[in-house]
Amino acid sequence: MRRPFLNAAAFFLLLVCVSAAHAQTAKDDLAARGQYIFSLAGGCACHTEPKGTPNAGGRVIPLPFGKLYSTNITPDKETGLGNWTDQQIRDAMIKGVRPNGERLLPAMPYEAYSGMADEDLQALIAYLRTLKPVRKQMPRLKTWLPFYRGVGTFFWTRFVAKSYTSVPKAPAAGAERGRYLVEHVSLCIDCHTPRNSMGIPQPSLYLAGAKKGPPLNVEVPNITPDKGTGIGDWSRDSIADLIQTGTKPDLDNVQGLMAEVVEAGYKNMKREDAQAIADYLKTVPPINHKTN
Ligand code: HEC
Image (tube, rainbow, N blue to C red):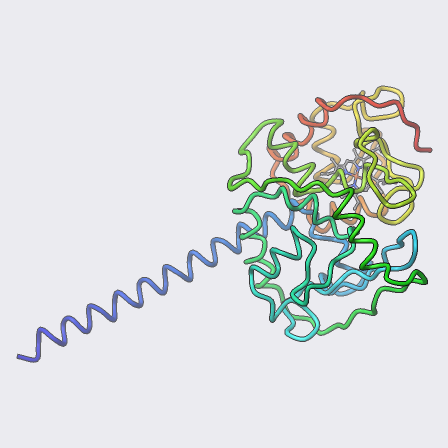
């Protein structure tokens, strides 16, 4: 009489084990996909101090009215994201809101990330959870302007930021995928589009570089197809090579932040994604704008 019950119990146990294993595999797959999104995103390199512990924050970002320190995005429970839910990480990334309601300054490109496809965002968050937790507390924002965070972000969200409607799926190929990566994942726009004195990007100089460009106030080149001042003469493959290796057609190497995002992420970009970016860059309007 007992047998059928035992058999059923054993079968049930087997089912539980198989579905748990399935769930774990699905989680691993998601994190593995997220690792690739992290590479596409240049390894979120602003969250690593030059020569510092990866992803533990602390890089100084100069702002018009002070100094901001990038945050620890490892899963440390006290000083990182360990106690944040997926939704809280998502809200910080795409809405610029911390779990305590505090607003992030727009140096964190949440407006651009708000156009990231849900599937990519979810995978990226799953990957962040697999990083080694590092305990490192960040100094607070240093500014002489009272209420900088509150007032600055209020004006930004009220008058400047436009929010994108997020897409469930990322474009799979072609220049459309290139645009998606340039604007919402790899964030070429964030460094290569100059900002005005208030820190607001200038759409009329889309990707046209700056003498003193964001985020570190150094020269950032014009990457529009302008022949004189941009990358008009570069072939599709030489643009893709630069993204994956940091080597320019004249065999010189890129320096500074560009070298950092290549090393921390773009070097693992698939060839077809680097080519999709090149294809898109060839479609943007050429802008004559000298940066040196
Ligand atoms: C974190 C900031 C940052 C991001 C993100 C970034 N760049 Fe750059 N990029 C720079 C800087 C700074 C330089 C100049 C490096 C140097 O002086 O050698 C540069 C150089 C370049 C150059 C060389 C241009 C020339 O004329 O020498 C190209 C092309 C380029 N970037 C394309 C891209 C593309 C495409 C993306 C997105 C996939 C991207 N960059 C993302 C900061 C960035």
